[in-house]
Amino acid sequence: MFNYDSFLKNKLRELKDAGSYRYFLEVNKSAQHFPHFHYLNNEGVQRSGVNWCSNDYLCMSTREEVIAKLGFVTHRSGTGSSGTRNISGTTIYHKELEKTLAEWHKKEAALLFNGAYAANVTALQTLARNISGLIFISDERNHASIIEGMRGCKNPKMIFRHNDMDHLREILSSLPAEQPKLVVFESVYSITGTVAPIKEIIELTKEYNALTYVDEVHAVGLYGETGAGLFEKESLEHEIDILNGTLSKAVGVFGGYIAASATVIDFIRSFGSGFIFTTSLPPAVCSAANKSIQLIREEREERQVFHQNVLLLRKTLKEYGVKYTPNDSHITSVPVGDANRCREVAHELLQKQSIYLQPINYPTVPVGEECLRIVITARHQPKHINHLAYSLNKILNARPVIKYNEANV
Image (cartoon, rainbow, N blue to C red; front, side):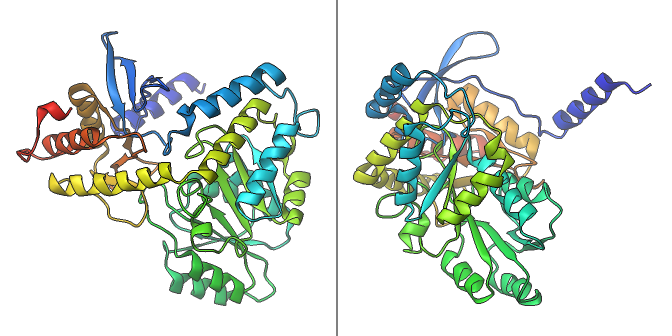
């Protein structure tokens, strides 16, 4: 007889042996003291640390105005919507937020989901299952949610080399002119931090009559005149067909969405099972996200501080001799190249230096590309940056650079 328990335990053991088992640190987050937090170590003793892997880039989750809005609407409308969008789950707060998102991205309409992952999967599968002969053309570095969305349907898929426009042209030119095509890519790639050549992609897809779908989750809130993302920065908002974004990173709340033409949004709203059969976001969450976006659009200071911190971080890493993967975005990854070593370094950083950096292992990255991804925020201070660079140098290299002032920690 098949031993289910033994099979599952063996699979878990293989994962642990490979260094890819995921351990969860229970973070006691403080809105007042972020990026500082508390946690219990293995002995049950409370300790503090500095968070270097939160995607709360602008620290909007800790803004008093956003928190107050969440609390106010919770008292007014309750803790949840208690229904799908078509069965009592569409409130004035959902519609207000969708209107804000559409305006922000200069699109006719937007559609809310419970996460950007769900938005990607639902949108891609809905289009593929209903447009006969649609073929996916996908960047090889696309996020797991995009891969899952394409995998969940029988449509053919073609992969182009990362950011390789010659290869993309080669694929597009090999397909019949009448073949429905959807080019799928990210504007900022979440691990490597590379930035897509969005203008060139748009030009190519227009030439070959292909639809375009972009995941902007790591750009929304951070780039452009009002923080709408890289497509706003490059004045290409009207050229992208479908944009996926998140409310859970720079916006600091929760949820995901797509923005597109009114026809595309109505189509996915009407045919997407991942939207139709899911309980909608709580009204208070929608209201808080709306407030956060309002603040992001009106205020530039937090974005400026954030990008200044990115530059300071990289300057300090160089001074301490810590190698990182260079790119044109804000994401800074320190290559390690071995899953077990990556885990060891992260453990030592937390236990000895009070630095929380989550190791990035397979399947998030290919085997051999394990790294520590540093996510800086607008609240990290020079003393935090200096301590991080010193600690990375000390642990990754045999001899630390003598540049450290203990009083700065």
